[in-house]
View 1 (cartoon, one colour):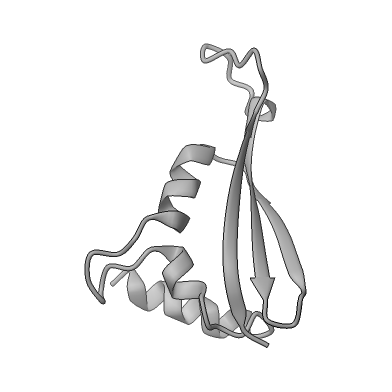
View 2: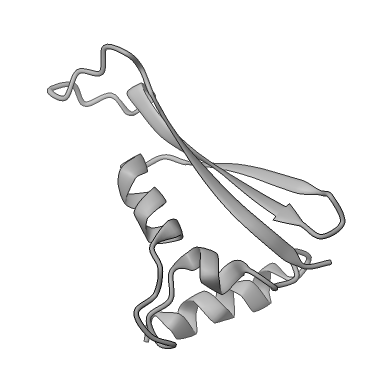
Length: 91
């Protein structure tokens, strides 16, 4: 199985109060798609716009790829291998 796509959807309540310290006002949902038609869904509880940028930003060279670029082609059944790819990309 290989990862074929990654989608990020930012969700924000219509009346988001920037002065509130309330993480229930916004979130980002991440969908990871495979070549076998399986989709994994996750949620990240931090600034959703930063997460979306980190995942979707294109790389500027081989040592500076976005997380989406790093995930494509990986086997989702091997999370430790994916973690190693992420760790090495941050060096």
